[in-house]
Structures are given as C-alpha cells and as structure tokens.
Amino acid sequence: MSDTTATSHVGNQPRPYRRRVPILWWVRRRSYLLFVAREVSSVFVAWFVVFLLLLVRAVLSGEDAYRRFLDWTANPFVLALNVVALLFVLLHAVTWFNLAPQAMVVKVRGRRLPPVLIAAAHFGAWAVVSAVVAWIVLG
Image (cartoon, rainbow, N blue to C red; front, side):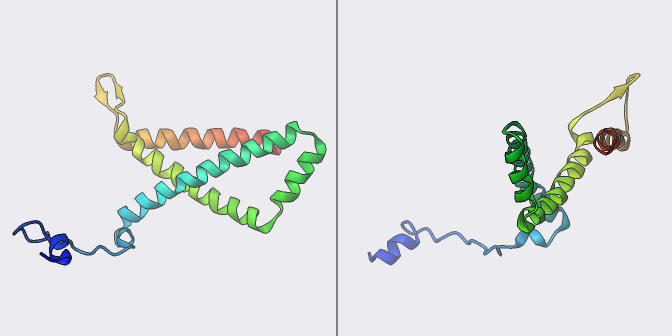
C-alpha cells in the first residue's frame, strides 16, 4: 500500500464525508451571532476588572501615579477600548438578565412567576443600582 492510500482510509472502509464549514458560519443566524458575541464579551468584562484593579493601584500609589493613570486613560486607544468594552459589557448584562428566567424558578404562593416578571425584576434592580451609583458619583 502506498502512504496516501494508508492515510485516506483504514482497510476497506471509505473515508467519512466531512462537510466543509465556513469560518463565519455563526454569522448566518441571529441566535448564533448573539451567542458568539456574548462569549466574546467575557474578554471585555475581564478587561474592565483589570482596568479597575489598575485604577485602585494608581489611587493607592499616590497622586503622581493617579495622574499618570489618568494621562494613560486619555490615550485615544484606551478610550476607544473602554467604549467598545462598555458596549460588550452592556450586551453581556442584557443577555444574562434575559437568560435568568430560564435558570431560576421563582414560585409565589405555589405558582410559578412568569419569565417576563423575573427578567423585569433583574432589569429593575439594575436600573436602581445604576441610579444610586450615578447619584453617588455625580453628587
């Protein structure tokens, strides 16, 4: 047997048919696109954690380190990265809150709450926490 015959199939068994899948197969359906975008958003959530840790380190290191950090954040690349990260984090949060009713069953007086109410409670809590944080930050 030649080497090409040996690698193409084993014994008399034909090679299984393998359909070619395009690289961007996930772009064709909205549900797949949202799934992949949500998975990618995890990277930007991690970036925000790193960014926050860098901010805390700069604040704890003194005024000069804090000024250098602010100068670094004024860089157009860092600013653009943070804007893109914010959009991905918002996507992550919205998709997570929309999945919450599937992950948890809430019963009140023996009856299951409708999924819309569970999602609405999550979005409402998000709005309240955001308003409190805005009130604290903006004075």
